[in-house]
Image 1 (tube, rainbow, N blue to C red):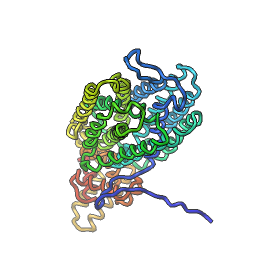
Image 2 (cartoon, one colour):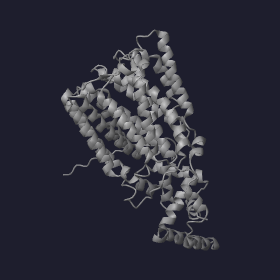
Image 3 (cartoon, one colour):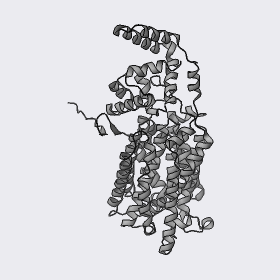
Image 4 (cartoon, rainbow, N blue to C red):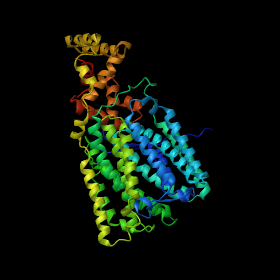
Length: 534
């Protein structure tokens, strides 16, 4: 007798033919990575028993940072920025399966090296290995998240936050020191298994969907407009991280585990609430609407959090940090998805700059142990400075119009407009269809066009016309995939199966595409794609 295990899919819908997003294995995989970060970077003494390096010599503070963490953060940030700068040059390597495998192996090796470490040198080696491996997997997760629609990115990120904190507080933190280290070392392998399920076959190996190139940007201006606000937000995030992950989370006890889990659940709720408030056409612009008042509330309690106890103040600070962290990840994913930018470029520079400034904010002498020794006026002044960084950083985030100015007019669009991709067979088919106004004649014309599109002669022409339309109307990465299938004649049900998305999500993408292209039927869209080269 066989046993049938039902497959359960979670989906949140709102309104007719609208989809809020889909919950997938992305939340489990990315949650595993976050739990690994919590354990290795912020509880090294508890998990590995490694040493702590005082930074009072060059910062004038009582902050202690392990050599492993310092080396890991620096290597992690540098490699991410290198990958962002070389995203197209080494694109085949970054998008290959072996890249994520190498990253997971390096993380395991670095974690085991930390377990066996007996000297500062070996801890630095462990930091270098974990920094390289973690950066590689973060880039792979960025690619995986960028393929989802914006609301699915927010939903999976919110759930990953809760899963990561539950795994850390209830499993890793309660295990004996030696056992906990081996459990943490196994997390990258579990993460890799999930990642391999979610990452598509590399674009140069698959044949069903086209490998659409990311939209080019004016790099200098984009990096200035993108990295400056990220740096300001990162420094403020570092202040919250030092109070929450370095003071509260490592001192968790059995009685406070549920309070920490509740804080992560509150953070997930706030992230989802911000998504509900988003404008349907420009979701990235409203992601941080809710974070400014939340951070302002948390900063009022910041001086009370360095005693390592779960109080109302520390609960608020931890909630604000987890919400802030999740929103930053969602922002990078939605930005790259919405404007069809290279996720390697966005996550490389975004996460690299963020990591360095978060580290600086954690180690800043006025934002750690010396805060609670100051009087109330000094503490309030520091909180006001951090809040000002959040407000200014939020105000400096590029808007939709600002992003459009930073996107370079794609050469393919200009080439298509000049007739570089003319297809005489398709033109003749269109003329034949136009000359015969009967329904039978239109069917013949459509069939002739479809046959010509599916032929080997016009495959490249059809793909490049789809890309030209997507670039011209700023379709997102997922909308571009849907456009390609729509132009081939697939309906919403078939698109759902092809892209492994809910039918409500497919219909939402189709509606957005019709609105952006100002068409009303699938036939109009197909004729637009066919005529894009004229």
